[in-house]
Length: 318
Image 1 (cartoon, rainbow, N blue to C red):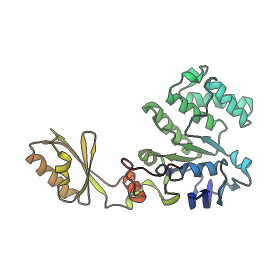
Image 2 (cartoon, rainbow, N blue to C red):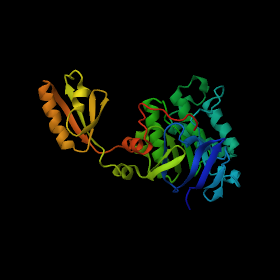
Image 3 (cartoon, rainbow, N blue to C red):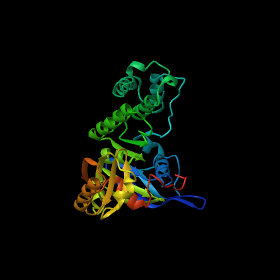
């Protein structure tokens, strides 16, 4: 049995089609990434799968239970972590956890044991009796995820779990996702962070304008566009108008400045490397480093959605 079965799901808001006949499944025990630009339909999908929104058409099942017809039973299998924090800032971390556990009808002895384990896991045990209005954004996010796990769910929905967080919180949350996956918990992860999906997900679905553009493992998705390769180079000193000069090298189709380096997109890395060396010599610059790369998940995302996430906008309804 799959953890999630979605069949011909649609959702209309007036004349706007937020979801357009999407079908996919999530295997039990896998970490499944749901990736797409703003307005693609990610949040609408999660709201339907968690029983908050009723679809216009189609159906969705969680462990064989219809989310519309058998909502309560389906919800008992899940934990939900929304993008926005749902903690009560006038309560302590411990009080927030215990309150959430009561909502899930977790017995007292079990909820206290589970609460301590989760607070220790997220590095919050020493601050358990502090009111959460004094917590940092990262601490609040960690507590929110702990609250989503208090009922020991078989399936957890994580909506942008690491958005805008500090490095420490980000690493803790990624480790927790891996641990959950190792224990057989199904993780449904929505994110704008392409690298996060690449590092944590067994499979990724890319959704765009309410339709599924592709579903596969990150590596297999990358393999679909082998023509998108790149050479990354760092020069010292950086010549004036370097982007323009590097773009003039044979077979370079695009130049991206990434910090102190330049990423040259090409179908022929060896030719580009020769061209970079010649360019550096002509500019009296030293090549500090040069590396070649295959296509990234970001390249797949851009190719399938037609959207450069660095520069372009999309619809605002999600």
